[in-house]
Length: 408
Image 1 (tube, one colour):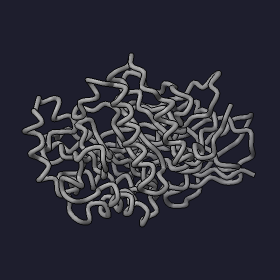
Image 2: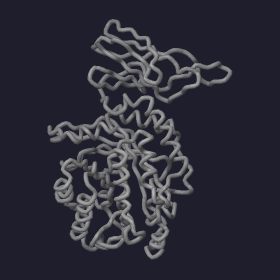
Image 3: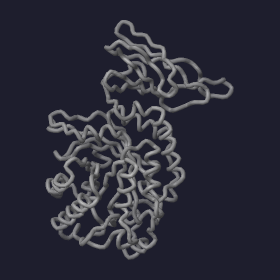
Image 4: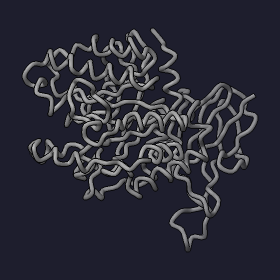
């Protein structure tokens, strides 16, 4: 099996931000508004003059991602409406350079590089705007590859490309060898990811693809039996019911659920790509920023356990929601549903102690909670390890608590 170093490095990133941003952000009805609301282009394109992100939109976005613990950001350089956030040069003038006189991808990449965040590019494969997509598919694929070539050559080193939309024409020959070959020619160490969609989560694909995807689904182990190449995995998730900014979507998930999703991703060695949809001015809603902030608080407590440790195949026998990761000779026990020490008159939780039982074939030297450094009681006997997972102290409830296990 071929193992590429850049894929291994991608797995260490752990947590990324997904950004759906385009002229649909002005409308505030989601990234599929053009299609779902049957808006003709003569009406839809009236949004272009209103699409004027604030001068520091990219810096603020990147700062939010960095504070949350994200190591990379994937930006929609062109979504299904065909409008590009980069200079499409001679291809057409359906882009931000013609629209607002700015190359927003350049602004994004510069902000990422300045902050030590790795820029990734989302790019649509289907296109509602380009006539060739319906009239001459072969010619359209040439247009698509030229678009990707521009992104490969104008912005320096890119972490990867994230494609979406092949599911729109499943029976067509997308000439994947030529598409991915374009990237390999200019960006040989870029991750290439092609979203398999809601109905095909975790499926392997073309040999050049470097990661499988789990769109809004819980990741799981990847079946690579007989596969010629090692691949990573990534789950993308949304805060509410849309990817692009939607003013009337109030169906927000709890931050605790997003923290659990991040932990579950790492349980199976997957990265989590957490989406946000900026408004037309490039800023994100306060609730989005706050949720990223809460996730960042959790990451700050437990970052040692988040990026480098990998699945180790050890199951917690008595608590299926708990799990272990390992890095070299150190193990990390992720504990969910722990109570908090409290008077029963002020809390629905109890202050009992609990235990996690698992088999570890190494002698443990010490165990401590990562959030406060307090020691954790344990016993190794008859081949079993029993860890006494004490409740949170009063005033602290972190959703998932992680204990560091140091072995001899």
